[in-house]
Image (tube, rainbow, N blue to C red; front, top):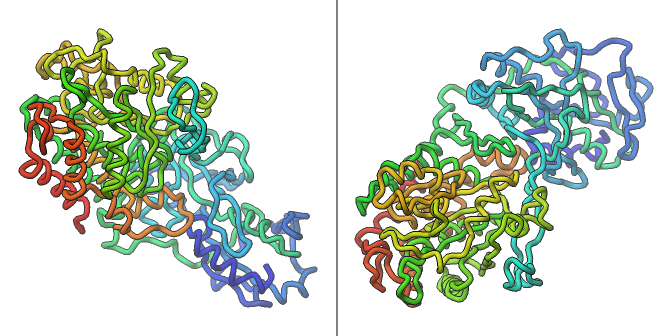
Length: 608
């Protein structure tokens, strides 16, 4: 491209190192001299270059000799090629693609934008390789051993679009579902935006056989979009498949650099759409430690029998990919008092809201209509006292039918346009098998509970919505995933067990602890270089681990003491004792909960 554009294009590549790994550039007039030791892998007599004029591809050329005068003022850029990944594929026990070289593997334009710079702007282009499920983790680890950002996949699973929708304040009510003066603004949670694998933008389509998973890598063909975007009068680019072999060695992580902070684990987090996520061994181990810490049983309820490995890890991975989250809480166990709510649930929910706000995700809370005023005041006080950064929408739902639930979750009731990516229930009364709602003492409190369970049931049938339930006794929304264990091991479990299942069931000795742990797990994931790169799809800069805004948004003893004080001010009672005071589930704040919060934060922020 023209010499005048070279500095800007170099910075564009540096801002998007995943798809545009810049190996070097030529001096003007020396572009036709290949790098030292280079061997041009071309087919004589066949087109080798595309010509671009004012952003449009206007033809193909076998040689650039006729443009020798123009080339005197042009600079050539050499970009690393995805063929360099073949060694990693072989290392994982997978054959090389098309070893005879008869075809060019397909590359797909995505809807993921690269970071723009000085007129260069284009979507990310990716290549795809179908991988057997049992080879995924070995492959990803082999790719990451290459070093740099081009080796690591940017997406594993369904590449299509899952539409999300998030809450906005200050506009007209969503008739028949909330009535709270809040309207939901349509948002799109993009995976890659590739509609059909059978229609690549470049090369030949790849077939993904049953039992295999599509895995996507950033492609240097992204540069073709960049050339078009700058609309320079004249530019040239190699035709896909026309590569130059150099004596440069593939970038490999130096020995000793493949530490637990750089070695990835692969986790299946969604079946519809099929989606896998990755995080480092170090981050995953930290989150497992959090799961172990909150899994103690101070009330001797038998919750150890309900624990399922890695539920906190998978729930937090799923939440990290979400753009719009709906959280519900509220367990009216004190049915003879006003308000009947308990102090377990709202603090954990607000702690998670605070961290989701710091991650710039859209978030709303949904509660029983009879408790709307209470929760509105709680949130206002939390903002005033600095526990929350800003006010959040508080919704209600009283539908009572499958159609009503779908209408609430989806724009115009269309399951192709869900408003939320993830539903979270933290100490929320859950519907039992007989249709009633029970507290731990087997008292039916159905008259105080709205059918928010229906939203979780409807979400199971809507692609792109995941769900998490946090509970400490088995009668909470989402605990249907462990209902058999609840019936066998929890007192009154045969009656009180929640029958409604969430995708992930986070078990904690006190449900608030589960909310704190989810916030801490998200901090760990966003501070993890492996996961952060996967989230941003190798485009744009990474944020520094321990970002100050994230650190300030973590739960703290001071903030949670304020939060519990707000509940006490509104006469909310402890779940076990019924006391209006600084305790949750009969356990004192300072001797129990404060220590738990500090322990979670210490593990979360500890340097490895």
